[in-house]
Image 1 (cartoon, rainbow, N blue to C red):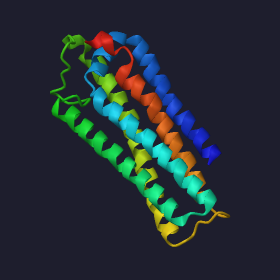
Image 2 (cartoon, one colour):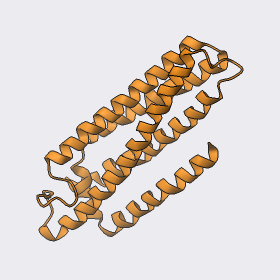
Image 3 (cartoon, one colour):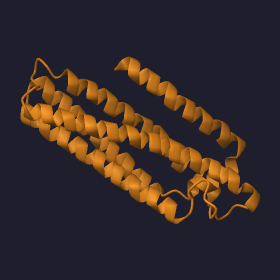
Image 4 (spheres, helix red, strand yellow):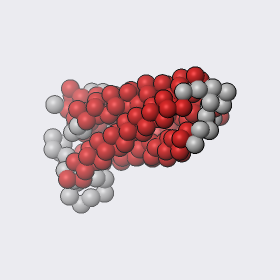
Length: 196
């Protein structure tokens, strides 16, 4: 799992590097585009993921103690928070579709920018959808893993002597949460005051 997470760090690292290069090249455009994102929904999702990390830690702890029912409870709560995150993200993406902030759309227009800067705004939204979309894909995979763990826990597979799958899934879940902790300020908050 640690080797897998290292490869994931390199993969996301490339996306973060791409974002950094273009943000440095077009800081005003990225500030205006960032200001069009719904920071309240982003903050809600940040809180939801922090809660999901806590419930995942509690599931691992319950596994260490061999508390089968508590493993199930905390995994279900983590799954619920993951579902809430994805639901909020779907609302946010729907807003972007309704505002025509989808790269490549003929109707794309971001208020506050002259026509010659609209292409750079599309670049921001290309990165936004790529980064949040890849993160959401990891969340969907995590939801699948949690569902499998719940099914296994209900069968009594895990005990105080064997809870490794819960522990390893926790590493993956925390990694996905940490990626969001970086995505939220980079996409939603940095230079937001410039776009106002």
